Image (cartoon, rainbow, N blue to C red; front, side, top):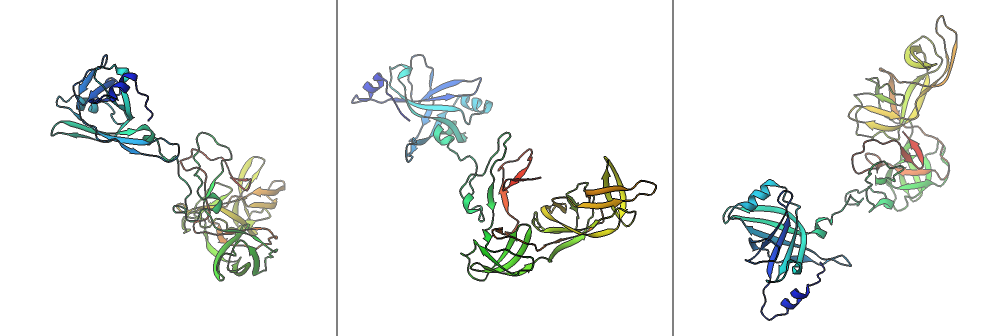
Length: 407
């Protein structure tokens, strides 16, 4: 710390024989207030000083690079035969109390005290019963508060961090933040299709994976389609594409939601099925037969029956392994007419459908057409992970992917 010597102190230090006293000032929390202690009997006009310093050690200083000031520490020991200090320490929060070490020449006023180290009381705080001595560290303020705020996306911690996000600080949200950028903490390679891919193609041409050795197996995602293959330069030989059933079952619970089913028997890890397709039997013409569904019309909600019409597929957006809940988007819809005995015919088109208890389903992949330039993403274990807030969030209103909002 910078020091401007008082003229009197400057004169004293230049004398042939001089020995300044060491003064410690501690700002105790109320009701005790500011106290001064010295390493010898001394007097300072207007300042009450008690000779309690047993040792203050050498000030250990760390010189910092650049323009940052040096940081320092000192170990302090105060005698306490009368138990006064122990009583104060037990009465208030002693750690983090402000304290300053000074040098002072006898006969000079308090304003001539020369500061050596200004900081805070830090641990370990110890009380030696033998000899009745209180010991603690005095830590430079610059060192006390020189701490990292937040974490960075280092590859040592996040091995699959996206190249563009490596080294970025993980976001911490204070208050309400709109469109805060996320960090891709777990991500795979990205590439593009060099040529269009039809649902029947088993050889695809891609860029972005040329650095991999020929014969490297890959699991990839194009739009919502998952496929596996072996890469050689820009040529991907597809080994599986569509039609592969990862899991199937029957719903065991009602969710009451238009974008979720629940099967407590569905095994897997969180988000394991994200990006795959949920395949469900969906009713068409509204009749009084077979499979229950919920039909909403004119604000009313009634249960009817309808025959199986066919399959529909929806991309899976989330999987909660603890409950067996599969979320998807958009909702399944039904189209056609509903005939109710004794009532007029009601036409229902594109109504969201709840998938009820006892419904059969499959989790699968569906091959599709993809144009040249379509994004190709590597699938990593556990799914891609984006960190929006490296702290608990009270609420998340929406998540945006490539500028589009998803619930």
